[in-house]
Image (cartoon, rainbow, N blue to C red):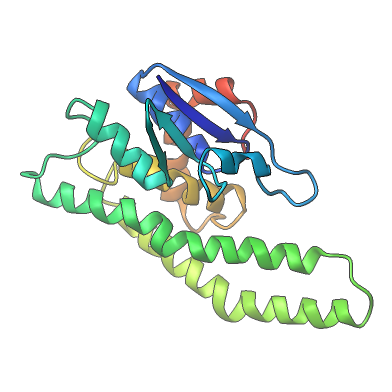
Length: 221
């Protein structure tokens, strides 16, 4: 039996969604973030030494990292679905690209944005707070915002000529990319300038399996 070690409000949500899409039997072990630090509880490290989510166990196997878990589930249980065949050259290349792009290229900027937002929001004494705020705003305006927008334009342009990220059907690449794109939309980064990203995210969220995953695990933002 597959067991998903699920941290609330995390990348784990997309693994839960994939399990629902594939119709696989599974169980959930729930873990709640610390309300002050927003970090995973320390006992998650009993499952995997890094103590991060998502992580699944499947019999004697323990698999961590979203991309690795998606690849494992698709290869082991996908029955030829959720991943383009290798003879479909362009779709297969797109699949590989988006699977690695999600965490390797775009997520680092989104994580940095979150970290600097949290630093700027901290309660600090004057004049330290003003110095920190100025520094954070400089990082945002000169580095984070331009790079994030560059990635958003890139994805927006791709979606202008593709219904899905890899081939003609939903694949693991769409599920892997859902997390950063949802972060863009819910974080107010898309506005009216990136309508295809917004519509694409709405399409993903409207899928019955996505909705079942929400009901199974509770609120997700």
